[in-house]
Amino acid sequence: MSLKLGQAPLSSAPELCKMGTVELAQQFRSGALSPVEVTQSVLQQAQDVQTHFNAFTLIDHQGALDLARASEKRWRQGAPLSPIDGVSTTIKDLVWLKGKSIRYGSLTSAPDPCAEDAPCVTNLRANGAVFIGVTTSPEMGWKAVTDSKAFGITRNPWDPEMTAGGSSGGAAVAAATGAGVLHVGTDGGGSIRIPASFCGIVGHKPTFGTVPAFPASAFGTVAHVGPMARNVADVAAMLSAMSGRDLRDWTQGWNTVIDFDLKHVQLAQLRIGYWSRPPGGDVDPDVSRAIALALDHLRAAGASIKAASLPEEDLHAVFQAHWFAGAANRLSPIASAHYPDMDEGLVHVAQIGARMSAPQLVAHQVRRANFGAAMDRLLSQFDVLISPAVSVLPFQAGLEVPGGSGLQRWTEWAGFSYPLNLSQQPACVIPCGRKRLHSGSTLPIGMQIVGARGADAHVLSIAQAIERMDLEHILV
Image (tube, rainbow, N blue to C red; front, side):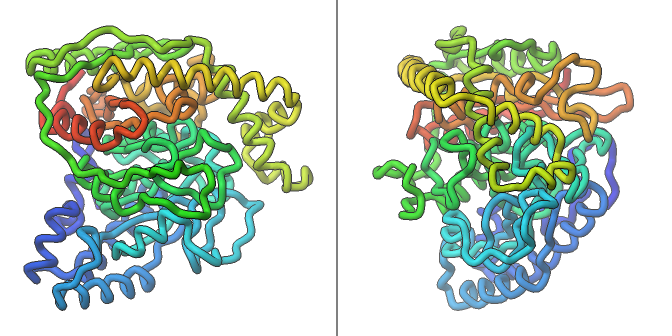
């Protein structure tokens, strides 16, 4: 695999690694291709991607080929389990995969294989997904870049000197480079959407509870599980396969929506709210310019676009209270003697969270509830909100914040992400332009599309309509 600066990482992938779910199903049904030969190509690509960008903690050659052979047999018998039967899939190193070691990006975790699948894996397995490996995460998924003492730095396939984002950074890299079609991510403060933006792919944070979770996240009800892929259609197909009620997840609503069929959307009829400023932070001018140019295309297509702002601006403290308390909860079973083996930033925020009083935490929970209700009211006025996905461009790999920015923590540049974990609305990130660098390379910029709770199918349908406008080729 050879990286060509300025080109999309997928351009150098083998042809079998570029196909999506629809094309693969057609090829499998006709017999023109088999899941086995596609899986073999994807496994080789994953190995090459690992060498260059460090996206995996595990590549499971034998397990993947066993699943692919079973899928091949079903397709030959004309009895596939679903449209994603035989499609290569990765699991993040925070999500249980039966028989495999999930390490949470940590030297302190036990290497014992998982005794059962997480609910989303159970659902994907029932639909015939072929699991090719486990993708990298920062320790405990605590930050929005992907590096750890256990597995090293995951690098951006557009420019290896840059971060892939996080915490689902390995999944985003795998998607961008053709090392699998479908990728399980988690998102507690932007961990699907930030790496999707930085790596130029599609990532969807569903309405909370749409995808069941078990074990329950130590970070509580800000944590979501969702799909990542190269296009909206694949994300929608994956979301359909991984969703549904699971009695291991008490936090799910009883009326869990599982219909994510994409509908045709008339852009001329859309009411769009433009959310241009994140809580307590600035936006890189090139990011703002790319979104503004994209909105010009939507206006030209007839969409109504009005300025929108969040109903509460001071959300940073509210999110940090939830996140830091969650970090303290996550570290509570780990002896302090092991802290030197852990990410210093994670230990630091956990110590802050441990000092928080119960009344302080409950006060922030009440503020969260008030904000969530206000967001529900705001989303009743628009079909969707549109915003930048991230306020900054990809920056140097191995850093938590952009060098020279004066920022202290990742939350300070993730203000377009974490509010929606507090309020639990669905949010989809799609590519929307690129920043041209002096070196001749380009870096992706993402657009975020936010809808009312439960309106995932509507959000994804609009995302696909915008995707078809080919805005990712906007250069700034």
